[in-house]
Amino acid sequence: MLGEKELVKLFPEFAELVQPSGIDLRVDEVFLQKGPGSLIDNEKNLPELEKLEPPIYTLEPKTAYSVTIDRKIKIPKGHSMLYLPRSTLLRSFVSIHTAVGDPGFYGTLQFLLVNQGEHPFTLKQGERIAQGVVFPVEGSGEYNGSYQEEE
Ligand SMILES: O=c1ccn([C@H]2C[C@H](O)[C@@H](COP(=O)(O)OP(=O)(O)OP(=O)(O)O)O2)c(=O)[nH]1
Image (cartoon, rainbow, N blue to C red; front, side):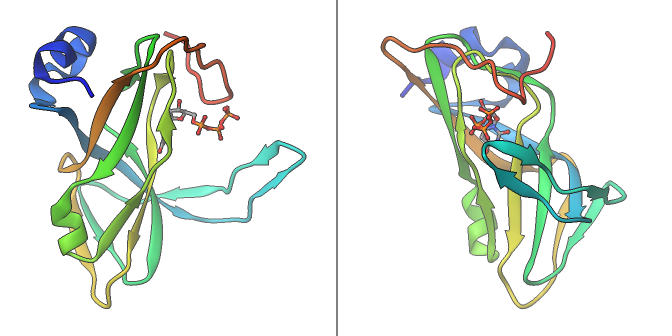
């Protein structure tokens, strides 16, 4: 896992968010699901989303939200990222579900946030919700999938 000194060099756009062993990630936009989706024969049909009004988001009990992370990220070639929740959210009965950040990815990260609790949880735009940890990957290729954006 990479530490602060390496992270500042590799992720200059996140400099002020670098922690001793990871990068703090802030919530930007929050969306509710508005329609169905499917994944059939690797053909993706993502659900339609409804954007919630910022900056105060009320997460209703037993409800899932798709959230974007503030500022686009470039994952350097030869490195992967894993995303872990901020423990304050877990202590508040809110979970974050994430996948792997691939070497070479550039774009907006999108996570699934679920209020597992019995009561609403209020979250302000810009709050830190997760930490990205970075690992060197031996012999890695580069991501060029459907979520890759133009640099
Ligand atoms: O929780 C996550 C984890 C990763 N990513 C970004 C970085 C990652 O490199 C990219 C693609 O992720 P993945 O490869 O898991 O997506 P896929 O469904 O396999 O997409 P594709 O078919 O385009 O590879 O999405 C997210 O937005 N959210």
